Length: 257
Image (cartoon, rainbow, N blue to C red):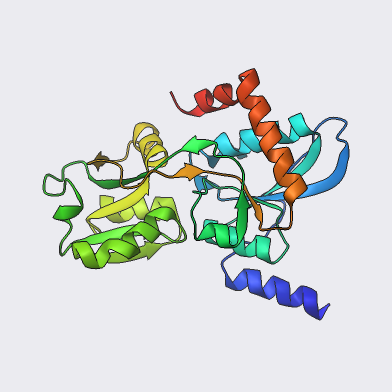
């Protein structure tokens, strides 16, 4: 009991949201040959990869992991949480799979194993749509840049702020990040280009991307390092099958034109 309470305290301290009927979505494939239920962690504030629509969790990542589970005959249960809590939850053995538009980085490879890449992303610099002063990193001296905790955008911002002379504001979700720039509290933000492009196109945000992409990241599906080789093989096999039979393209086309 003490061990269980310690694990729960660890994850709570790291920002993992409580998993209950409102943030857990169970999914099972028909006639699944693997009786184990694999728990998948996602951040439900990251459209078009995962978000809540009409009370239901949807998005590229949600559809993709469901399709992989069906193709490979295993069961999953999706748990919604803050993005920064996903890897710590896997380390605490409370999750089996991590998603959430997770970029494949050397730092993350120290604690997780990644699937084959499933989406080419990259970080964009974003400003208010009426901002004519910021067009690149060179224009950020003395400015405030807002980022979302635990993301590649945050890592990029923190590793280049001394070089370009900007200060950093950290928030825990995408909506707060967008609002900081919209209301003028921050001058710019750094976000994965498919996410911000989708948000601007569908959400009526008064924002725009400027300059070239700052990074060339790829998204991957993660499992705890060295602990789930068989599951990772199933994920890769399922992903390959979906790309071959056209299901992958259908999923992407559902959310991105």
